[in-house]
Amino acid sequence: MFQVTEGWAPLCRFLGMPEPSEPFPGLNSRPAIKQSIRNLTRRCYVTVALYAAAAALIAGALYRALR
Image 1 (cartoon, rainbow, N blue to C red):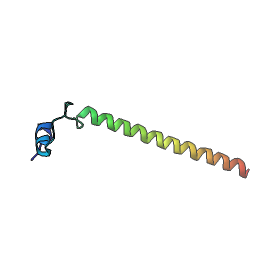
Image 2: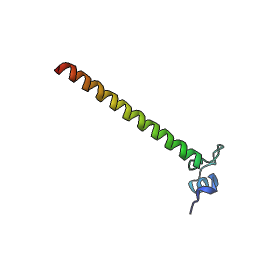
Image 3: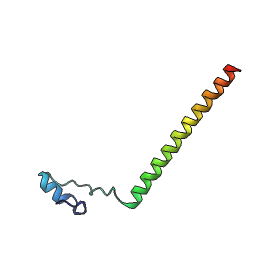
Image 4: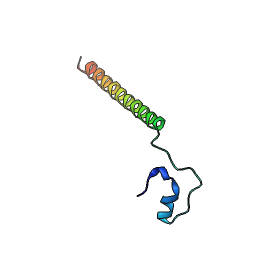
């Protein structure tokens, strides 16, 4: 069974491919996960803010049109 901690060697051996020169990706490190969560949270806040601004603009336009 392949363990990610073993790196490229067993995976490349199994696939019959040469080992890449770049290091094996360590995407599950604590700092990388925390950064991903921060980025996702920031995007969510921006999206909510944009929808709220659009709703306020539409409400304002409707108020002026119906007044």
